[in-house]
Length: 462
Image 1 (spheres, rainbow, N blue to C red):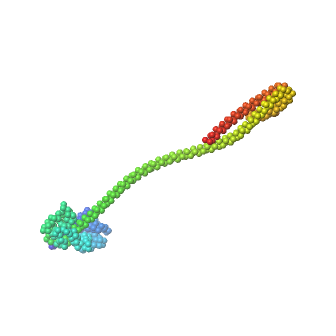
Image 2: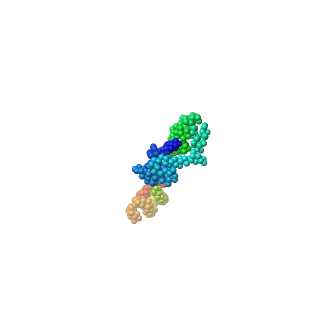
Image 3: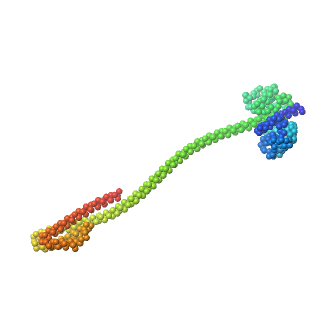
C-alpha cells in the first residue's frame, strides 16, 4: 500500500469515526475502532436510523451472541439502506463487516458520506465537490494570498484554511489573528489552522501538516476535510437561526407572559369587581325584599284604610240621611210648637176674656162657663193629643177621651162655679207647664241633634 493510500485510509478512519460518534453518542454507543466495532450490526443499524430519522422495521438482535446473528443484523441494516433509504453502496457485504475488511468498510462509509454530506452541498448551480469548491471561494473572497482553484494545490500553504477559520470566527482577535498567517510559512499556517479548527470549530484533525505540505494527501481526503468546514458553517448558521428563533420565541413568551400577567391582573380586578357587584346585588336584593315587604304592608294598610274610609263614608251617608230626616222632623215640630203657642196664647186671651165676662155677669158666667168647659175640654183634648204626639214615649196607653176627660168633667161638675173655674184653671196651668217643659225638652234635643249633625258633617269633610 502506497503512502498516499495509507494517508487516505488514516483520513477516512478519523473522519468516519468522528462522523459516526456525532450520531451514536445520542444512544451512548460510541465507536472507538471503526475496524472492529461495526462487526455485529448493532451500531450500523442505530447509525442508519439516526442518520435517516427512520426506524428499521425488521426485527433484529441488540445483543447477537453468534456470528450468524451478527451477520443477520448486518444484513438487515444493509437491506434497510438499500430498500428503504434507496442508497447504493460500493458493494460491501455483511460478511465484510463481520470479517473486519477495513477497505470495504471505509469504501462503504465513504459512499454513505458522499451521499449525505457532500452530495447535499449545493451552491448556486453547483453541487457536491464543485459546489464545495465554489463555497470555499465565496467564503475566502478578499482574503490576502488566498486563491481557490482546486482541492489538490489551493490548500497546501494553509492560507485557505486560515481564511476559513477567520471567516467562521468573524475575525475575532481573541481566537484568531489572520495577520499572523504568512504565505512563506505554510507549516505554521497549517498547524495554526488545524489547531483553531479543532478548538473553536470542533473539527477532528484528519490531516497531517507534513502530508498536506508534501502533497501526500489525495483529493478525496481534502474534500472530506474541507466538507467538515462547510458543515461547521452550516451548523453555525442553523444554530444562529435557531438562536434567533429562540430569542424571538423568548420575546414572544415574555410578551405572552406579560399579557398573561396583565390578563391575570385584569382577571383579579374583574373578580374583585364581580365580588363587589355580587355584594352590591345582595344588598340591593335585601333592600328590594325590604321594600317589597314595606310596599306590601303599605298596600295592605291602604286597603284597610280604604275599607275603613268606605265604612266611614257609609256611616256619613247614613248620618246625613238621618240628619236630613231629623231636620225635617225638627222643622215639623217647630211648626207644631209655633201653632200650639199661638193656640195657647189665644186660649189665654179667651180665658181672660171669659173670666172678665164671668165677673161682670153671672148669667153670662154660667153660659160662658159651659162654653169654657166645652172649650177647655176640647183644648185639653187637643193638648193631650199634642202631648201624645210630642212625647209619645212618655204617655201611657190611657185613652184621654174615654177616661181622663170624663173624670175631669165629673170632678168639676160636682163643685160650684168658682170651684169649677179654679180646678179648670189649675188643670190648664198644669197642662201648660207640662207642655212648656216638653217644648223646652224638644228645643234642647233639637239643639243637641243639630250639634251632633254638624260634628258628623265636619268629620265627613275631613
